[in-house]
Length: 347
Ligand code: KG4
Ligand code: ZN
Image (cartoon, rainbow, N blue to C red; front, side, top):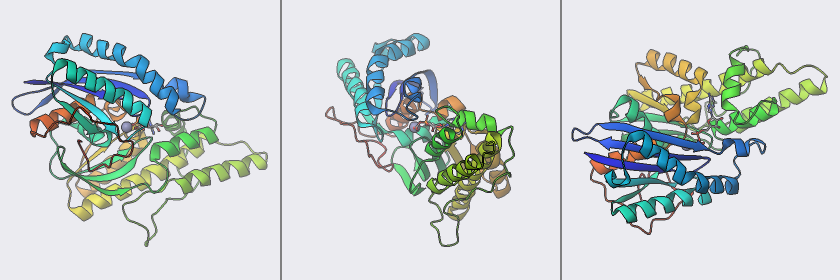
């Protein structure tokens, strides 16, 4: 039995998670505490790196205390520390990495510097157990939109495709601003879309032409199309039908994401799909993915919304997979790598 402390600070969430790796290889979630600085960034319409770093500094110790309180564990119970060392915002990552080093050094336990994106995939194992090999992961967040082939969570992740411009969540956040909805844009657009007509406006589906990259995404053209459509309405003095714009935009995003993910799974002969990252909380994405995966005979797994957005539990879970696989820990001179490639699961 091994207790793993997980620390996440790559963007605007300070996350501390505790998991237990049992002798049979199962991983149990014991604590998942998150402090978000999202409200501090709302008026800027996006995350301000320096503000995020400072908020991590202030939140780290209180969040850590809460995680230990909730779990009933004490620091001396910790057997290993896992921390996000990339990709993400340099200053924000450094806060988590520095804290993790301090805990690992003081407690004299191994330290694992891990990949945030692999962590998003590992989050699902807390809800649904080990991943079949191979699994196709669709990772959709504010910073990333990727299709990954996951053979194992210790050292087997390959990128199949990714966005060539905006991430899916970024498109939600930018479109929300255009139609006067608050930041972050995903939840309010999801809500407005439920009242709107998804067929009202035919927004473009990026990179879906016959000669386009099959597994890559592009959301910048869609975002511009929404902005132009809204501008034209406003110039004509007409009301902007916010619910219809939200529903039609959301339909375009969900259509492209699910079509490409299902196509990749079918082409590669992969029978299980995991969707994770903040946008995986989207109601239409989940419904359309369920429909299309069922039609293609693919088993679909989506972690509960709390585990989809950034958290420390997913980092702790990934740490548990690394410990279980006997992966060598990181050295104490570990540094943050804002551009850590997805195939590098631990450093
Ligand atoms: O994974 P995450 O918490 O942070 C990053 O690593 O980026 O994802 C945040 C993103 C934001 O862009 C937010 O607008 C989006 O996830 N999001 C959603 C929903 N909930 C959050 N997008 C669409 N529908 C939602 N329900
Ligand atoms: Zn994330």
